[in-house]
Amino acid sequence: MEHLLPETALVVEGGGMRGVFSTGLLDGFLERTFDPFHIYIGVSAGSTSLAAFLAEMHGRNRKIYTDLSTGPEFINLKRFLRGGHLMDLDWLIYSKNRPFIVGMTDVETGRTVYKTTAAEDLEHVLKASSALPVVYRGFPMVDGRPMTDGGISDPIPVAEAIRRGAKRILVIRSRPRCQVSRRDALSYLVSWSLRKYPALQATIEAHDRVYNETLTLIRRPPEGVSVIEICPPDSFRPGKFTRDARVLREGYEQGRAMAEEAIARWERSSLT
Image (cartoon, rainbow, N blue to C red):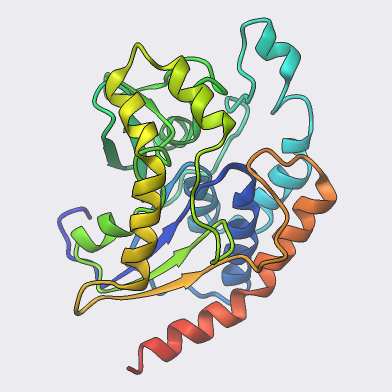
C-alpha cells in the first residue's frame, strides 16, 4: 500500500480531547457512507478517530470521549503523583480492520516516524502516537525504538500526504480556523522535563513554527494539489484536557453537523 501513489487522502489532526470534533465529523461520514479516500494519515487523537472510522465503528469514540474519558481511569492526578500515568491509554481497545498510516515522534531523533499499521500492532502504535510526554510516563517502544506523541513533530501531516503523492486532500482540524499555535505553560514544562533528550526537546520548541507553517501549506498548497480544510466553528469549546461531558457532547455534535458541508465541499472540488 505504501508503494502506491494515492490520488486522495484524509488527514486528521490530533489535539487531545479536541479530537471529539473529528470523531463527530467522521461518524457523520459513516452515516452517509462517504469514503472516497485512498490513503489515511493521523497523529495522536486524530489516529484514534481514524481507527474507529476505518473499522466502521459508529459511536465508538463518542462513547470514549463523553463517557469513558471523563472517568478516573483515563485522567487521574493521584495516580500520576504516585508515579503512574496521568493519562492512561492502556485500557483503550480498538478494532483492527483496515491498515492506515500513523505518525509518531522518535524520542532519540525528534523526527516523525510514519508507520503503516497492521492488525497485530495497531493498538500499540495508536498508544505510542497519543502518548504525550510527561503526561504519559515513559515512552512506548515501536520497532525497538522509543516513541511519543506524533503531534509533537508533525501536528497536521499534510506534507506527508503530498509526499506520498496525494493530489486531493481533506484535512480535519481540531481548532477553529482562526487559531494558530502558541506555546503554553504545559509546553514549557514538557520541554524542561525532557532536557535529557535534546533532539526531542528541540522538536517541542519548534512545534509552533511547524504547526503554523503547515497552516500556510494547507491554504497555499503546491501547484496541482488541492486541500480542503474542515475546522470546528468559532464556538467550539473543548480543550486538550476537557472533561466536561456536556462540552464534549456539544463538540461531537458540532463535528457531526458539519459532515454534510464537508462532503459537499469535497464533491464541488472534484468538478474543478
